[in-house]
Image (cartoon, rainbow, N blue to C red; front, side, top):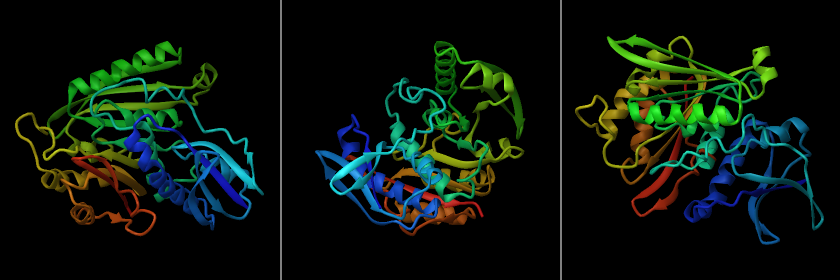
Length: 337
């Protein structure tokens, strides 16, 4: 049977040009995770629209629902002769889809790209078929796009960042969002001490409906203000299933202790062991980076040096794409065994 996935249009024309390539790689990861022996995966123009198509044995409803996680899927169809038959498979949205889109700021990563990294990391982990909500960790979360993408899809989220202003903007926005949508929630604030450093924590507990909240069917967002090198210790008792991080695209990372900046190499040598320890065994991470300032070979070397198993085979080697003159972005995927 031939299946066709129409891709979302994207406002960023440069990202739209890469969407066919990235969408194909993401779909390949998802097909592998559901155990589907698909063939002839390609991009086709049908009726003036871009579709990902592949040939596979008839998929079960469970498999179709898992494929509906695809970050850029607009419409799922099967092809019968020259006709497309839409498949009524709802997207697995938990919270309204505007959650990750409303907050705008310079340097924000596309929510579609972020969701793709979540999918790819989850597909590479041992937790793709887990019934309970997984936890997504972003150890350099900024103003929370990764966390919001995870929550929107019904996952728990943890964000760590050293920048107090970014985290405050993230928390203020989320509080307003919950109130605007009249979502039942609770906010608990506290502080923890790690390596003689006080780490403020905001813990949101929420649900998609009042009934689910009362039944205890809730999700959580934890925001921790501290150096990313503390992540492993902060999550020692509650490790995450997957980790998603978008590395800065410039030459140097923002000051990590308020006084000095670190090179990418120094930063990653310091924090990757901690990031690995923040994952459960069988967990996986997806890290995006600018190949013009951090060659893929070097990042792979650093990940392997931290004890991670980097996935270098297809389709995990197919994410490099042009963003702008100074940025060619790629994604490295690795597992904690």
